Image 1: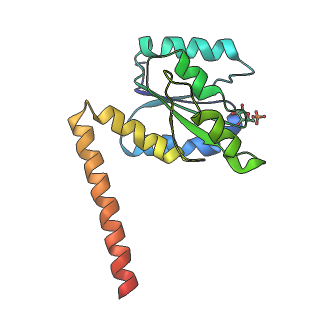
Image 2: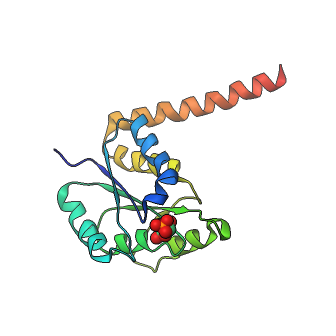
Length: 162
Ligand code: RP5
């Protein structure tokens, strides 16, 4: 089985209800992805192995979601040359602000493209845009998607005024 373009990983299976939206966005564009649980704290070696092998296996983008002390995206970014998109997962306390700050405040030299708290759909769409930079056909589909979004707003505006 060939390696898909995107890895969608998370610190716990309890993150999946949030991360699922990234997979849905990738599905909409026909982008292949794999899913897995890699905890920065509970399975550090497994996480590092995944990150170190990702580029060699043929992955092109990693989406990493975690909540609370959300160290997974940053640690993965430290061990791969691939672009990493971080998704702050909101937990029971602190409304995901802890997750956001844990992911977004990376030291210079180790970037993580952080989306909003719970913003997994945008993570999927950002991964599509990254892949589309070297895939004209995919870029055309992204342009069409944006045109549809714009049309939707026009339609809602017209309905409101009617
Ligand atoms: C984090 O701890 C995970 O990303 C998850 O958001 C959080 C809670 O994990 P569980 O206790 O539900 O497995 O590392």
